Length: 102
Image (cartoon, rainbow, N blue to C red; front, side, top):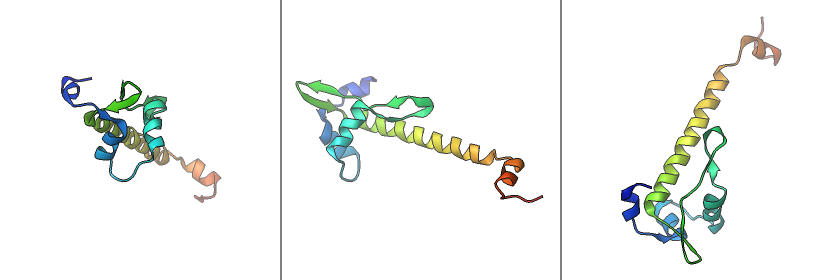
């Protein structure tokens, strides 16, 4: 973690998410973000950094923003790969499914 993030105050996990993410989030969303994470590129998982103060999970606003940035980059990367694969369809494949005639 970078020094700037270390100086960001730890706050309860659900509060940090409420303050940084628009819209209402179910508490199970926060649990999933720290345990299972979300899909990244190449099969890795992106997890929200969390620290425990006793039994309470805490994080920083900066950690939430970093998590959202990484998830967004991964999603955009997957979309780009999908678009590239869609553009790689050959004439033979199009003809085989009846979308191209000779």
